[in-house]
Amino acid sequence: MTRMISRRVALGAFGASLALLPALKARAAEKLRVGKAVAQVFGYIPLDIGMKYGFFEHEGLEIEEISFVSGSELAQAVTAGAIDISLSGGPDIAFTAKGAPEIAVATITTSPAFMGIAVGSQSTAHTTDDLKGKRIAVTSAGSLTYWLVDELNRVKGWRDSERAIPVAIGGAPPTQLAAIKTGQVDASIGGLQVGYQLEERKEGRLLADISDYVPELEMFVTFARTALVEQNPSALRRFLKGWYGAVAYMKAHKAETVKLAAEVLSWSPTVAERCYDHVIARFSADGRFETKALDKLRASFVDLKILDASADMSKLYTEEFLPKS
Image 1 (cartoon, rainbow, N blue to C red):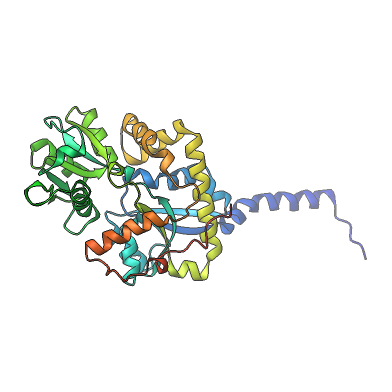
Image 2 (cartoon, one colour; image 1 turned 90 degrees about the vertical axis):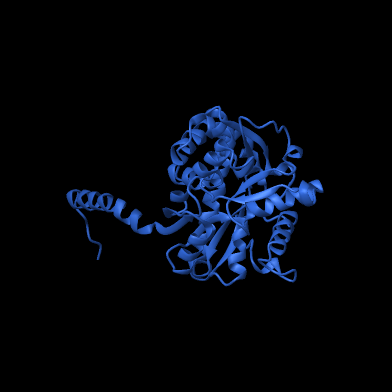
């Protein structure tokens, strides 16, 4: 038997369904906890762009962004189950080799141009050739920045008293700025912005970016917790689709990207714009890992005695979840 529904009843039902839409939408969105190894890194800005301009929301995802002070602290949070996806340095692939329950799922950039060597205003250095025998600030012994000084010595062929000397001072940008300003060191390896901030304050300048002598290196990487890979690969695929949609947006929308980066990173608009101009083309558009960049990263692991020469890098990353071309 066919039942007739009155206009009033139909309109009431329609209104009720509209009222439920926000709740249904909220329930449909899957929450992902995404950690940044360090808050003030331009390489992680696609996360903020994706959140602000709806790239993750379009994929049915709700992002909870959590910032840490180091890659090791972030890896501990992943191990504890507090983070689903992490944005960290390529060298943190070593944590996977040592048993951390995560795997590298996409490259953010294979260019070391996101890092630079800064010098003070009193410095007479003009190129990296002028760093022979100089003291260069690094985060710590055994760190990537420490290795970058050793690699500079190797590339330049400096030996014995000619060698540039790494000086461990920690990774905080204010500490790096102070060490350069006071003459504790002759130069510092850190984020590209350190040199730009020194120039803005008329206290120093950017001497060179690291790609001046290390053309390729697996610099920044997206990692996924093993549990997410196994239990919800769809969410991971959608996250990466949203991420690379955000990267494409950044490359086409400089003003919007610079404005948000300055706000998120607490940089001046000038510093944010200079960083954008210097590295925007170096963001990976598809997340594919590059053999040369991985080989250089592996070499750093061996040099620093983090992994031995027999380590199989192919087991530490996957391209299975990247967006299809």
